[in-house]
Length: 341
Image (tube, rainbow, N blue to C red; front, side, top):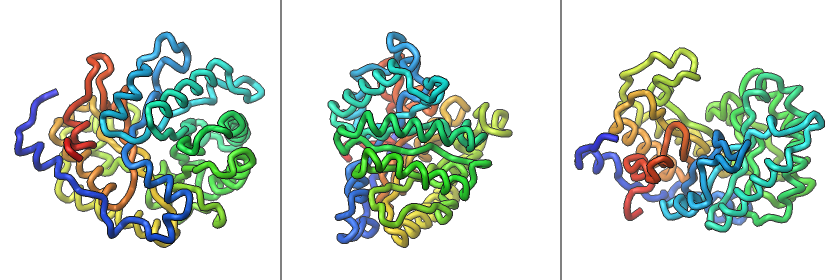
């Protein structure tokens, strides 16, 4: 990684404390979801694409990395689970896969980290909602039973980024089945649920949650401006050959305006918010100084609005920690957790 000037880093890493003005009101803090949200603060997505799920002996992510994450200034991990490929024809989860998940949950908890279990089969679920629903129900039946006795520092996220044809109406209908399934075994477990269109903030008004269930954190994901964060990304439509897109002052203003919208929805609906993913693609040739400015700007605005956040991601792409070299990608880590904060 290239070194930046001191002036650039000083500008990018301005510390913004959590705003008292945006903190939940006293009446809200008594509700379990608000209490859970205040404990989350800073997180990172982990191990979604790690070989450990198929062969633990080939794992890149090791036990030591939980302590490294904790020492690095992070409070929680969002564990990315693609469980459908580890189910049999009767939708039963593979015992070896479950044993690996047990180890992940136990080791993360022992390191003092809150754990979000994120069911990440969003593409198959969105492509074929009717085929997905029984698998998703079976997943949460099994996970709910298995983890019913674990500490409340383990949180369930029902599905990452639903999107068309899994539209708002179909997603709300699915939630009406999924939430009772989880509540049957985990009546007091904090849940994370986001809206459709890839957990888009503009879809928050379409989310239909049970009014009497006050232990739900609402999540959104934020990769705007998309042409900046995903330039060169081979999996994103029409982005593989895009390059040279800057991160501008106008982009920073848009982030604040967007987060103002989310905060207004949160206040109107009395629901705490989690920014579950954000980042800028690291293999696209975006200059490091631009990625630092973007990462710092998103982090500052999230904290200023009282939103805990989870960076995408520890390893693989959008990289935060270089496992091969056993070290943080320092400019990104400092943008997320400035020294002394």
